[in-house]
Image 1 (cartoon, rainbow, N blue to C red):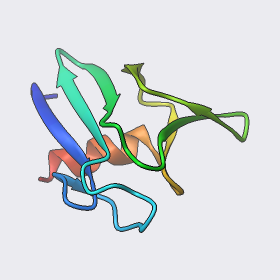
Image 2: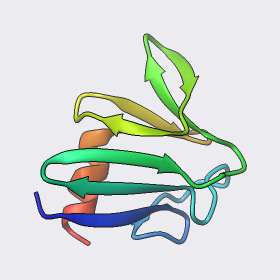
Image 3: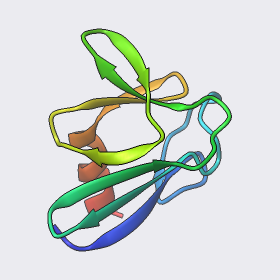
Length: 87
């Protein structure tokens, strides 16, 4: 993977079309095959999905097998990374 920084949200590099997602909801940094996600003080929060439950997430390393929620929008980390690579 290429070292890059992406903004996730309604107006970000990785666009999520959901009214519960902020225009600049979170930042995904890909650096040396590590993934670091930071919530950008979004209105409806960023969450890790663990066993069907939402766990609030502010910042930290994530892996490809995790599922995230940005507001009510749920997606896999794999989906985000795939969408980032075509931007």
